[in-house]
Length: 240
Image 1 (cartoon, rainbow, N blue to C red):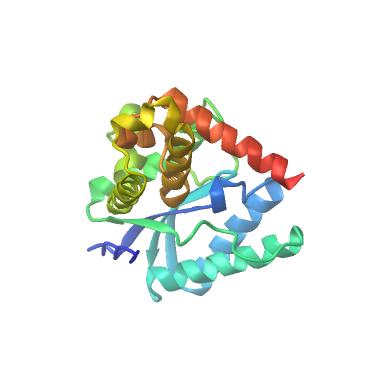
Image 2: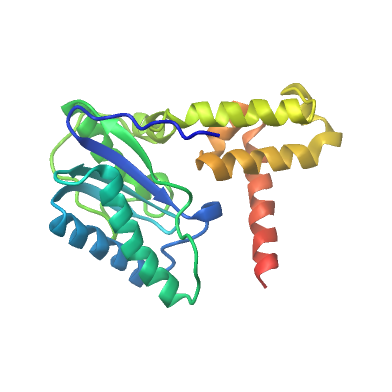
């Protein structure tokens, strides 16, 4: 399936998200998180890029970037290679570290810029890592004041990378047709294994939240959560 083209920012500023393969942890400990931040800051300095915000969690990193000399793709390639070399050496592994290519959303107004910066700042709160905004070591400070509510920030991720919707909808349509299913029949007990497979296909292909997958497939959020938990446990057993 061809990849969708990226939206171009009239301000040349982008919200960028990278995540691990199969939603696995790629920043497993404090050293990993600090190493990525160092790679980001070093490459930004060498390659002339403004870093307005960042937040590094265990499975993903959000950034607000303005590449001034290279293209965004060239910049991210350099940052990702730098961290992947460190990660593969530390954990005695090889191959890709990050899930497919990075995701990006174009920033086209000062208001959107402030909104996204606030979202990145609140990411540890949204993910349940800390209850106090700013009380997380591996993120940039907020700086400035922006008029946006916590509720609007909470729903930002699912609306930010809207170019993924076409991928998700196409995947779902193709899968349902292949197995002669409808959205309604997904909830039949006899189709549990197919539903399980489709949930993970959408999850791994887009990185969408449980809420978003639930809305796309018409499946209860709790069931989507359980399916993902089962898959993660099976993955752990496979590695033992």
